[in-house]
Image (cartoon, rainbow, N blue to C red):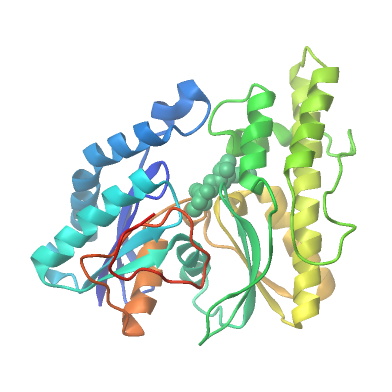
Length: 343
Ligand code: KG4
Ligand code: ZN
């Protein structure tokens, strides 16, 4: 079964062909970092305009690189939300039109269901139930993932997402956009014990997170040490990264214990962070749980994960009509992808 996935929820236009929900035949990503770099963050209107120009070329390349004719496709999987509404609509409209022309089914996919499917693309043996930790620019949440029922939200951020905190701290430190990877690179030269930043929510029960106070604490520390030289930037980066990842590791451990589950999948852009991978692996070895990370190339937004999640949905018999709408905000586990107006 050949599924074309299209992902355009934020600032990447991506298309991918996946065979049988597992084998990635192509994964094309058109990034827009140069479009947004002058503004230090994603400008939604510029993102959707760039998507309009990129979408047909990106889909065509995904087919060529996979060696697949459009007529051979069995279905189309589209990110329907959450995300920037203008960005979502570009991939969604294009994909619906293509599926209509080809006379094949299409399904709307939740962006986080896509991220979670990326773990299974990396490790086919990963079987539910497991704990899913989603860490990205827009989300920080712990879920209990079941085989035959919707994911159960255990806890989530009350303010900023962890990736957003990486990006904002990087901006304060004068590091280039996109901030997360730049901060992680700077942290490699730093001492993570140089400054003890707060570990928000660690002293509270439950599985919620908060990153806005940590971000402010780092901004104040940077201000106090200004002007910052390379060594100071490295130390602040490493100390922030230690605090940010500490909370993720501790809450994930607690969730695994509370739910009595032996498996954890960590997905989303921040799952590309090597220090987080190291610390989670250490915790897994100490507590006796298995940790699964997607391959680095599948952590940040891509369409292979959408095709994989779409293949699962199509196999369950899900089909959506041409009225399939885009949703800027929608909880994982709810699928309001019925015909009707988006919001
Ligand atoms: O999953 P993703 O591509 O988009 C969303 O769905 O949000 O995640 C992007 C986020 C950004 O905040 C980016 O800074 C962060 O992932 N990120 C990283 C790293 N690579 C990407 N954060 C920390 N360390 C990294 N190596
Ligand atoms: Zn994402």
